Image (cartoon, rainbow, N blue to C red; front, side, top):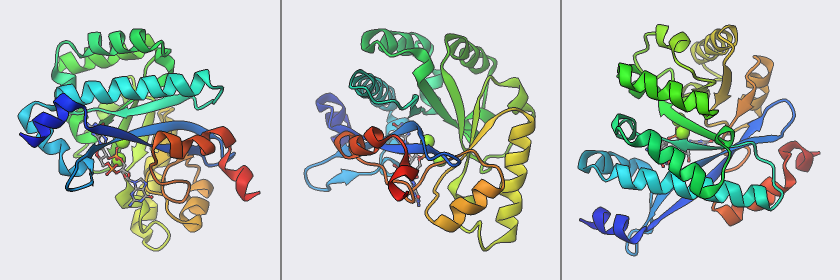
Length: 256
Ligand code: C2E
Ligand code: MG
Ligand code: MG
């Protein structure tokens, strides 16, 4: 019931984390990550309430709020002359299953004035594996509108890799569990290299999640991973917090 109240009162806030071109340092996109603002427990992280929101069906309303607020914020940044190319929004399977989801996306884009090409939707690999014909149709419609699609937490689901060529996706986000020990565990290095090479031959971009150290960054670059996201560049921050980074536009410029 506390979560239900939070939905009514819109007690949520989005934090934003840059996705960085590993070659040039340019901020290519920003991922929106939701937090629940409570009086007694401070910020509650999504892992601690998204599953509940999914169970209770509240995810529909929360997800729509996230989409709308993320698109609104992105449009505001663009209007202020900042240049991230895309805002990435995480989706739950339940949102996809909802017949009105496509209409919701179109309405939000119209209301906020954001170009569909500046929106990227992230679906986790395990959700993709439960795909239905309806979901494929939906993804195709979104893709035709110009919306980008990324597979989140790639490598953790039970993949039938055949879906990769059937779905209109542009990006694979390599799960952070493979990045964590990439410089010390040869198995992780091998897995990441395999994912990068497979993605490239399917003409998909790869993003490494959870990049925390210069060593991980150097290794990923040398293996041809194009994009990275993680504490090494920036933790997720409030819109005001991330503003100076977006203004700077290039995260290598600072380091010189
Ligand atoms: P995700 O989409 O895979 O997001 C990446 C998570 O890794 C985020 O956790 C982020 O804060 C964290 N992270 C980023 N860089 C680093 C790093 O360098 N090291 C480590 N250890 N962690 C890093 P967060 O914000 O707690 O979000 C967790 C998950 O909750 C997200 O995973 C996503 O699946 C879900 N989520 C977040 N926002 C939403 C939303 O609006 N809707 C839905 N349906 N799910 C969301
Ligand atoms: Mg994500
Ligand atoms: Mg992820």
